[in-house]
Length: 199
Image (cartoon, rainbow, N blue to C red; front, side, top):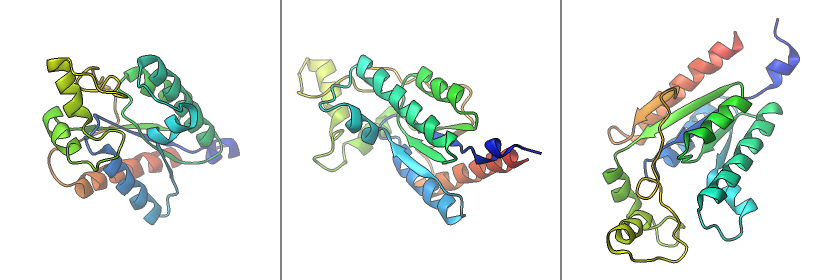
């Protein structure tokens, strides 16, 4: 028989992928699907965590290391208190996700794959005023022409490599199919893991 402590612990599902891959949209849909299935979950966005600890983000590697550690610690604490967590964060370094995997026993990594060209096209259509609006266009112009843009740090996929985990539990290609269909695939796999953890 499982102990009360084990039963009270939650789980974490981390949605990762390039900016513009559609991970935020899919994670929102999956969270709603799980809630509709009476599986409670709390969704955490990286930007929200960053705002708590960094007043004027510069998106340096040192800053990202600091903020991702805060994100992992926050998620691990919530899980320990029996709260199920969905993380929406690029986490370009594999070690960020591995840090979470070591601290959180019930952990699922969801890689949302999407070609950089498609991510660039999607990102270019984002509303003005968003922190990441025109991010790729500016990063590419900076790389090709040396143009400098204020408040534009290193951009994942252009200036910094995204490291995909070979051990991710779930992988979806969001360049094909609809976000709803891909979310349904992810939800089905998550429920399969939840059922396994109950045994």
